[in-house]
Amino acid sequence: MKEKVVLIGAGSAMFTRGLVADMLRRKWQGELRLVDVDPEALAVAKGLARKMIQAKRSPLKLSGSTDRRDLLKGATAVICTIGVGGRRAWEQDVYIPRKYGIYQPVGDSVMPGGSARALRMIPAMVGIAWDVLALAPGALFFNYGNPMGPNCRAVRKATGANVIGLCHGVIHIAQHIANLLGVPLDRLKYNAVGMNHLTWFTQVRVEGQDAMPRLRALAREKLRRRINRLSPPGHAGQAASGRGRVRPDESEPFTWELVDLFGAFPAVYDCHIIEFFPHFFHREGSYYGRTPGVNWVNFEERIASGDAIFEEMRQVARSRGPLAKDYFARISGEHEQVIEMIESIRTDAGRVFSVNLPNRGIVPNLPYDAVIECPGIADAGGIRAIAQPPLDSAIAGTLATRFQWAETIVEAALAGSREKFVQALLLDGSVESVPMAHQLADDLLRAHAKYLPQFRRPKQEGRMFCRKPERAERGRPWA
Image 1 (cartoon, rainbow, N blue to C red):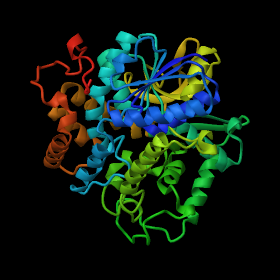
Image 2 (image 1 turned 135 degrees about the horizontal axis):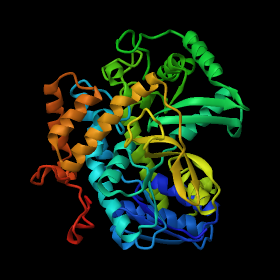
Image 3 (image 1 turned 180 degrees about the horizontal axis):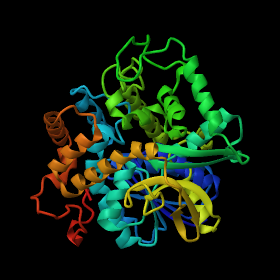
Image 4 (image 1 turned 60 degrees about the vertical axis):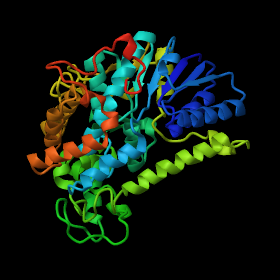
């Protein structure tokens, strides 16, 4: 195929590697245009992509720039993977709340870390959207950046751009469920609906038979078989020895408790799911005797791994030696389905993918304007969500406050409103008092001040900061 793909946030080198490998594997012959505001990160991504293209002797054309406006014109697809502030800002999203006794294993989707990241991400995402509308109005526009729901909601609310949110979580859980049931993935039929990183598999079928009773029975078996059962959520209890990997038959215990209780399978794994239930899990020792982000799913190790991966990419990009033989092997990651989705649209294949789109009545008992994760069909008409039955009231209840949190943090980010930020922290449920919410908000705003221009400008009542920019404003790093 001959697409003109612009990757914004190309310094996420692992994504770049996976995307280039997929394009080469499928023998695409168009253009790949790499954008990153960090010249060093761009050089690594471009050097890596160039070596891969040359190794396969592909006619794929490669270009790069630190200014997206140089490369957006004529694009047929725009893929956004930015992370404003990078891993150093992400560290503050997790470390600052720890001072208040709030522990997060990931901190990029909800809880205070997700709220702080949304404040940084939304102005940048809205600026990108305005430029896509101006320079590539017909392009498919994909976002992979977290927090997914708030980012996509803000772009649509501020600009009307038809952004599609993508995440590999649902397809990974589908494969996980297939493995649990002992069937190939292509024999599994399912519906998964919710909010990114808390998406519920409400229907699972194998050859027309409801498989949810089997999963529920498996949940009960796993919960019964847990060895040296630890204390329930919300109590420190007896801590496990070692650095906190849950034993194999204890793995994902909260997931299995939810499967047993709700009769639906939540995605994506405990490290994301527990952050939607901070009233259980934000304290020291609250995850079955372990502390989230400390001796269970250690956050420092997560950051160190990301730094190490980027350093390895840098060395490969700069090396004069050939690429390893397995460098083009299919790797798992966020890039996985975007190429297939574009091909499904161009060939009118009508394949179904998990996507993040506005609800607009697709799920009747979820908010109309909320961005939901749901099945969507990709054909010549683009991507559209597939209508779903109402969710069970209890499952809808697990999402209700989260959608209102998302709308509130979007309002905070678009208007540069400290008051809305404090409100969002209260809605999130991690803080224990209004004064704590105020103090935590101020600490996070100070730490990230250089990435928050909307909080530095004079406020005008009722006016969004992230409005359509004048020509002279476009192209600024924050936009």
